[in-house]
Each structure stands twice: as structure tokens, then as C-alpha cells.
Length: 319
Image 1 (spheres, rainbow, N blue to C red):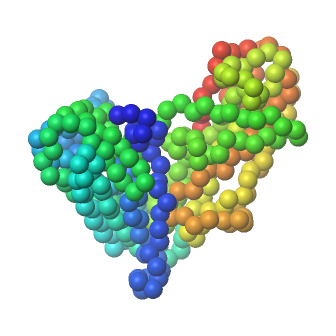
Image 2 (image 1 turned 180 degrees about the vertical axis):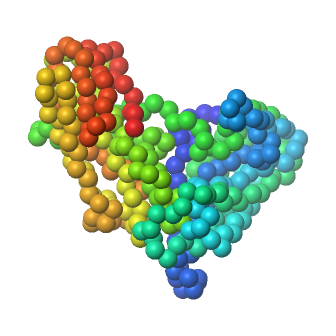
Image 3 (image 1 turned 90 degrees about the vertical axis):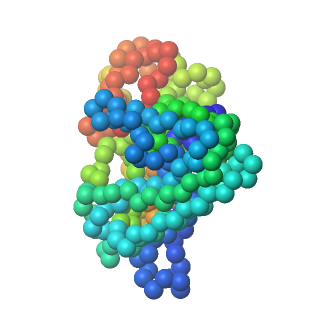
């Protein structure tokens, strides 16, 4: 795998499309084309690891390569009348996948769905492939695969996300512009419930800490300088839309306590954009005053992080 691989950058959904009401008599019909987690091999081939955690999958040369596109976990009660289809066409070293996942969502889009859920998966196979390197193309995104090879996980969504580096530009007033949430590892952003998608209990916001100076070439926290706190908040997909409005936050120091106050719009605050399952998290970034050496507690509504100043590197993002 190289830098283009979805396995390296973490999974994210492509832009989904809703089936037009004119073609489907039921407006609750959700249709995702070339959208979902890309999975290689079959589920039965995944080796069992310790504690039931999959240990990986072996892909062989000289045999057809099984490819599938998997939805997020859909509520068995809310997501009904499911269907899926998948085709793959070889174009030299390119394996071009087309897929469609569709289901009927609940009548009340704002109603939480029961947590009993299953994946919807569209499955297809290539012709027998000789040993070599290939590119699996799903929509606008490309994943590299080598045959034969061993993958740590079958589906790219299951790959743990890499650490996130956040760069924040200093600008008065204290609130500063955050790195767009869409450029951060999606695995660090709590998923939002959508049409027929299981509604999890809301987790805490994700807190990311870094140096506040754009001139800083490293993530070191230095004595006598402010820090930047970025809060990533769930952006709910309700009624097939999510908000694009920004969030706001402030940091107030009380001794060695850094109290963060974040305010976020609701899922219906305008402007909004269409969605089916995921919305980019709402990001709010603020900075502290200059910090003396010491150990500080960052407190966001009871969520607490401990940081040390100075430090060779800032801690990673933690929900």
C-alpha cells in the first residue's frame, strides 16, 4: 500500500446520492452508488485473532479477487427492503468497481433506531489475477493492492486512523480558524446517525491540542506560548440534511485549569447540505493565553485532558 491507499488515510464516505422520487414511489428510498467501505476477500477468509478480533486476510495470486462494498451498520428495524449489486471490470492493472446499496429508511427520520443492526454488502469478483500490483478504483478513490499479500484488515473502514496533525493560524480575536474537519482522519470523528443508520448514544466531543503559532514547524508545546484547542462535534444527519454552520469556543485559564466552553449549531441550523449517513464534524478552535511551565488540565464540560508545558509534542486527538 502507498500514500494513495484508503488504508493509509482512513476511511471516508464518497458523496452519496438519493434516489429521485420520480424513479421511486417511496421518498424514503436511500441509494448509495460507489459509496461505502471497500472490502477485499470474503468474510469467511478472515483469520480469527485474540479476543475475536480479526487478525487479517491473505490475498492469493492466480485466483479471482473477491471485492465488496459495505454500508455502515444499518438498523434491522429502520432500514428495510435492502438490495445491493456490484460489478468489477479489469482495465489492465486497474480494477474498476461499480456498486449500489439501497434500502428504505424509517418514516420518522428523527427517531432513534434500535441498535440491533447488520451490514449491507454488495459483492463481486474479478477474473483470475496473476501476481502483481493493482489499483482498485471505487468512484474517485483508488486503493493499491498487491497479489499475493496479507492485509491487516479486510475492510478499509476497520483500519485504525493515523494520528492527526492540526495546524492553526493565530489571529485575533482569540477564536482562530480550525483545520477543516474534512481534512482530518474521519475515524477520529464520531459518526452521525442517518436514514436507517443505528443511533448510538452521543459520545463526548473530540478534543485536539496543538501549538497556536502557525510559524511553529513542530507540534512542540513551548513555555510562554499559547496552545490551540480544537473541538470536533458530531454533526447529525437528520431529515437527510446536516448543518454547515460553524462552531465557536473559548479557553479561560484558572490557575492550571484550562476551561473550554464550546458552542455548536443544531443539525437544522442554516446553511445546510444534503446527507444520508455522515456529515463532516463541526470544528471550533480557540486558544489559551501564554502558558508558563507546568501541568495543565484541559476541561470541556467534564471531559478532561492533561497536558505538560513544555512538551516535545502535543498529545493526539482524544474523544
